[in-house]
Length: 337
Image 1 (cartoon, rainbow, N blue to C red):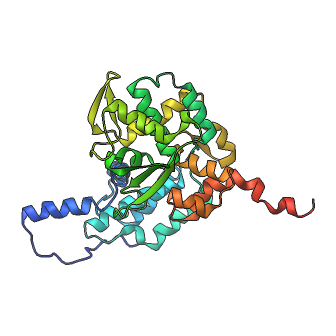
Image 2 (image 1 turned 90 degrees about the horizontal axis):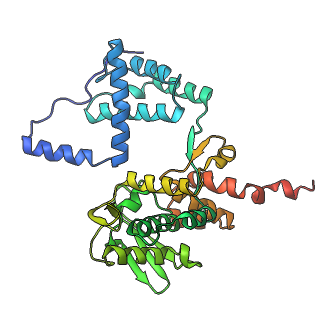
Image 3 (image 1 turned 120 degrees about the vertical axis):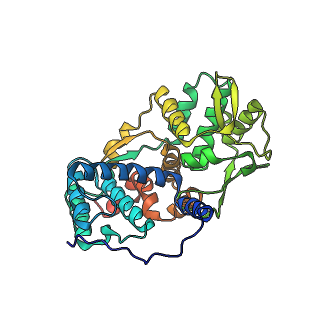
């Protein structure tokens, strides 16, 4: 493979420092926060590896990237290596440099790792289903406190609206509309909607008061002194079990709440490891996964489920739908055995 990396464009017109700052901010915002954080971590690993060996990191060459892939294949999954390669590619393209990862040899190395290691994820979020959620709510002994009311609302609205942890964290009171039959929840931006077109999810009143997401949200609003439409973050951190912050809660805090409440109820998600064929655990994605799994177990078809989960690709949704309905959907019971 050629070790030569050329600049993709000729030097352009020099712009002012003020315009350069604005341009940098604009380009930075073109990727989701989680993607930027993930790429930063990947590049830190790649640069450190290059420096240890005296290889050029930026710009780098296809030979170096292929060698890095071979090195990483001994310790991490195919999906992690793919993330690393994507980060290296983005760093070069953003700097106006030739993309070393586009070389045929690099693609062959990545494909070879996939063939030898498999491309299935090494870990997967275990679904917190409706049944699991009932156990979690039953185990909560602090529902009379602000923390308990907030956490119950987070868990139930996240499950009912099939939300990612970042989507729950980003909710404001302006994103809610109360109807006689339930709530309308506006998802302003998501992983698959980076341009902010938005989606509206309907959340009906629950069949059981203790697990009704609408009543849980209203209980939290009353406890926090907030009202639908007042513009406040829907969920915030709580200090000393009583002092409610005015700023929104972080998505990592959402994940910790889900994990802590599930653990307290004795739910680890490990029972899904055999079903998925890989390690599973409760995470910030477990509410969204739980909605898809519960809906599939209730016999709903994938297209109907996708309208609420907002999956753009049914093959992504099938990771949760297929295990839940595999026996019912199988033709094995229809061939006369």
